[in-house]
Image 1 (spheres, rainbow, N blue to C red):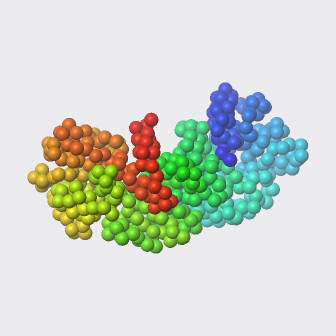
Image 2: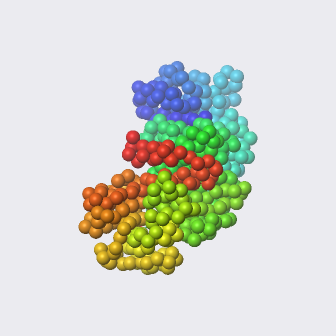
Image 3: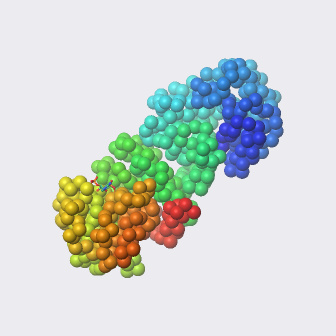
Length: 498
Ligand code: NAP
């Protein structure tokens, strides 16, 4: 079930938000601690969906400013008024005793006993669960703060063991996946904000995102998990693309963002969750390779993976960036991938800006196609090192103007959102007969591409490469070739904000 908290501070706004929330949520949570002099009777009379009445004290992350007696009195009133659920903090439940024992059968209110930890996710959550179980509440709620992505696994384990209905997830950016994967993890419910800016706790995503980006309501215990490993991951458009494709193909799969600091810890811990496939992005494309069970020969040669497939418990790494970039550079009607030689690239003088993960993949791909590649990078030693690996040339940035270039490729983030006014190369160095390929896809048309167009160059944006690599990932995971047109449409819509 999905619960939307109501955090308005006056009666009119509470009633309006409750009505709006009831269109999407299964339950709403009435946060009395946000409301001045709440008219509880009137609010409950107006409910159309079941209501959890909560009155959080400051010590548990709430806003209630009155005395403890006043706070508890409001919760007791909620029981008298037959609220559907009342949430009582574990250290206050003794104060509710008399009423909670009398509530059955006179009141149909279900009691939630809650524990919140805003600092961390302790290792001994089972002890907390057992302690809370002793209060005999209908539902237990254990919510902690994730300081690292692997904290989510502690919540997952707890939920696997629970006998009593349990609401459990991690707060904070690292905990977002436990909120999204609530059904797969086995949580009684998850919380989502009515809209951005109306969050009642850190890491709470909006109902719109939960329903439309993650389609979280259609998951179940069998849903296969896929996701993006990177940092940052919050602005990635991959979740909307892969989740839409899963839905279109009727696959019981879900794709979530994993904000990862330590790739080794993450890969080890998340084997327990049996994640079926990953996309890998900055800064883990190169380091991930050391923690896999097998690596595809091309990815091994490149030294970076952007895709991981779980094959019967064995994690196998691939690099779809390479093929995707070469396809983007070619005539896609004829060039279906690295299997075919892209004759039009043979002997072409390619100047490649950058020596990071993307440049590595592109350089190896071009080399296989017989192009004459020259690498240029801010850190010249890095360019030299990559050039040695690939078997191509490296040049210093100062020598760039004298280079013979048929194809110029930008594989640096210079010009990427939000620094959209930057460009990696002076406009005067762009010649009309050049092909200019910018791997950046946000914005769709970079300053480099605009200037190249104005100089009469043929331009290629980063979107085709992005679409190709996403399609190749999807095919590796599912064995199904997804429609490129659909991926392009979703990506375009997200990027231009339609
Ligand atoms: P990366 O591994 O971090 O490498 C970044 C490269 O850019 C390095 O060579 C770095 O030089 C250089 N660089 C960074 N900031 C610079 C600056 N201010 N001036 C000059 N050079 C700079 O990143 P990556 O994975 O290769 O990604 C690079 C770009 O490729 C991304 O921004 C992304 O837009 C694009 N990309 C696109 C796709 C797609 O599907 N379209 C896929 C992957 C990547 P140093 O070595 O000197 O630090």
